Length: 159
Image 1 (cartoon, helix red, strand yellow):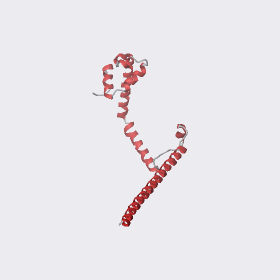
Image 2 (cartoon, one colour):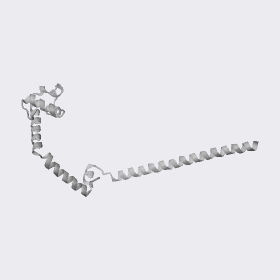
Image 3 (spheres, rainbow, N blue to C red):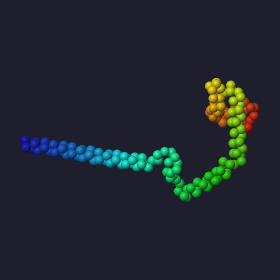
Image 4 (cartoon, rainbow, N blue to C red):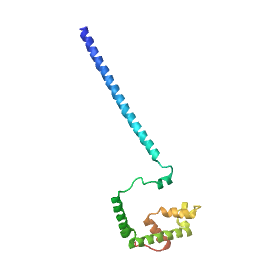
């Protein structure tokens, strides 16, 4: 019976050793995979560093990093022609743009002449033109048009 017990203990010990060996192999294999991934990442970083331009001018004058295919470039050019013709340079859009420029210019002049019409932190600024420009830049379109009407008495857009 003692011999049978000894074989059982030895069998359990063999299974335990086998388990440790398998665990060690898994850890080693995992370590190799991690090391391979780290080496690949290092090689990629080295390749990117080697290809990187030295300054912004080198980047501007170098080949494009990404571009449309020839077919897509042709479609893009046609889309741009359409947008410029039908939207950006449409007479109604040009008219509204001109009126908006007038409103901003007149608002700027009105606040330069009467800075007290702006909040105190803008009105008391040492660089008055910059303060006026910053104040107008922070306005919504609707608020700018209301202020323009309040300060000039003119409505450039229908209410």
